[in-house]
Length: 304
Image (cartoon, rainbow, N blue to C red; front, side, top):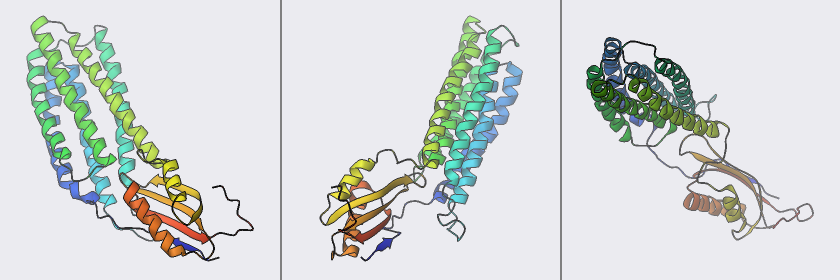
């Protein structure tokens, strides 16, 4: 029997994690600048909606700074200690951003429910509307910057979800401020904040769930492991495929490993190259580790 293990198949030159650092830095500068304005305005206006939006902007700034740091780490070359580099730094960043959204949502929900009970100062509706409108413009500009990113990653998605939640917060603050200004209904402000809380919970849970799938090495969404196994088994000359594993190292970086058996006397190297082509062209999996061996007829139970 001759065995062949091949750890790397194909080379895909996608944009590097460092390609979008400039866009993250631009978004960070916008958010930090306006955050200071919104904190002051929220205190002056007595608006929990503005203060909740400003508090969320603090996490926006933290999330973008974290994403920027993770992008720098992920762009580092591989080393003897980190043979895949630090690509999963971006996944950890996305999970921390998702968890931060959930924690902040809980804090803001508590404050908003307290305001609904009649507590808190009067709300200056006009200030809320003006600052909310400016905040919406800032968030649109920052989110647009990230939307122009050259690649898709959970890291960038985490920062973008923070910005979108903050955009919704600004819009909710505008609506709440208008209701307070025109109808004098104070409860509109905390209700607007609760709307933002609901959106933050949805975004935060989505990020935590998606990043957890990567960290737990679940099969990537959109890739059917059983279909991949059938495609390999049905390829000419293949006797059996087992120990098939498909996972995702980081966003858009699927990997596969498998043990393949071919008929005695068959060309193991040739079959491996053929299977790599199938995986690359049909399933967009370029990083594969295939061990191809000859069948032992006296030991193998053929499951085909």
